[in-house]
Image (cartoon, rainbow, N blue to C red; front, side):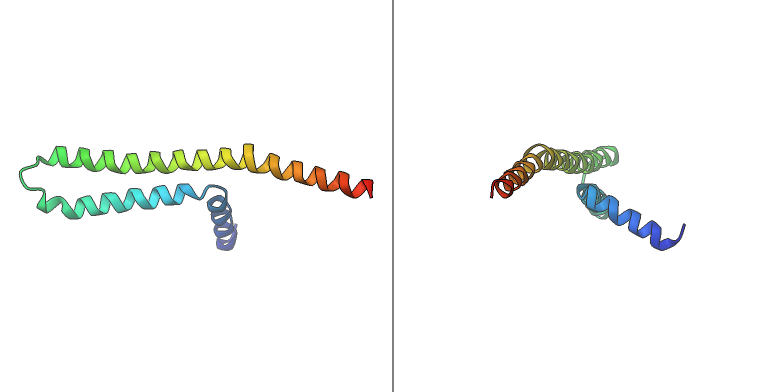
Length: 97
């Protein structure tokens, strides 16, 4: 398997689920920012700071996954039936002419 095949497979997966890379980017952004802010945490204990960081990062990922599932359901149950109905209407109108 070549590098091009791997890249095309990755791009296909990203197009199928665009919120997965968004969730991953948000996760790493939050973790990076909170690690950067680690030295200026003040009187907060290290464990509390790390727990807050983990909760924020997980919350972002869960939110991105939830939005992705809602978007997928919207496409599957609202957009696709609407397009199929429109195609059937056009097909029946074409046959009646």
